[in-house]
Length: 347
Ligand code: ADP
Ligand code: MG
Image: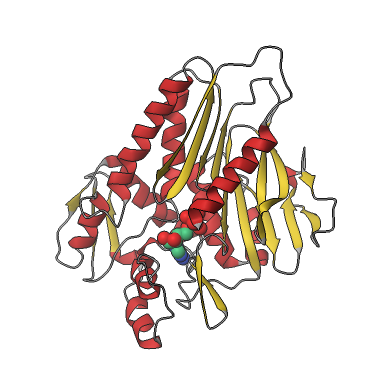
């Protein structure tokens, strides 16, 4: 299902971003592939496009083999395997820095963002074929193992250790943002100045479109993902979206999605249908879209007011779409009767 949605999103974005017919089409290369459990697509303008995409793809594959929890050979799996046995697991510097970064985001939003959520994801079956509502006892056992403070990270030695047996790391909320940042660097290093990457709902734009105008990036309507909620005008940023519609299952007529509130062990139920975070920092964008989806509107806006490094689109279940003022320029909302009302949130 995720695969289908992502293809739709890529198609929608490309449709919205296609520029007016130019006399001479600029050289470009595009590729769509499956990695990190999602569909990714990259378009690079300029003569070096094909090389840039190849390099970006190899980098994403390298990161996947470090970060995947389901790949028994990954470095994350090595940390998980040694949980509780006292071993410091030596990892690549990239990974130890990413773990430290995840810890720092947990400190900013304690009780929402926690990469040691893995046992709870497993209790719900989100990593397996079969999903189900866990018994309270299963959930309690899993919740006891969620505690980022028991993940020790030594960035100097580039090593990490989980203190309690049974603990596991799951980088699902941050890995694609990290990959976006690395892939972006790889693409820029080829000299490319105009590109767009969609890594499964994390859209990164490099520079502007070949005609010099800013990129236009569609935010999906979480209730009808073949439609858009709004279109943002962006340059040199990542727009990450998290929503309950991305991955879910239904049991007894109730929908359960994959973003877990560590306070309850249940799918977050904060009154938001989706959160889009726009930032020049792709890791921050990815992590915050997940964390602020759990936090809800009031806390998300308070947090936004306390910082100046990101902007937000909050789609509430009541049909109100709150867009922070930094995205007002070039914003396109829906004029038709989709039932949404749009408000600009000011500092
Ligand atoms: P997606 O990866 O589907 O685009 P997100 O970026 O919001 O969506 O990440 C959701 C993933 O993050 C889940 O599949 C799971 O791996 C992980 N996750 C779920 N709840 C939390 C949480 N409270 N803190 C950190 N990671 C989480
Ligand atoms: Mg995320």
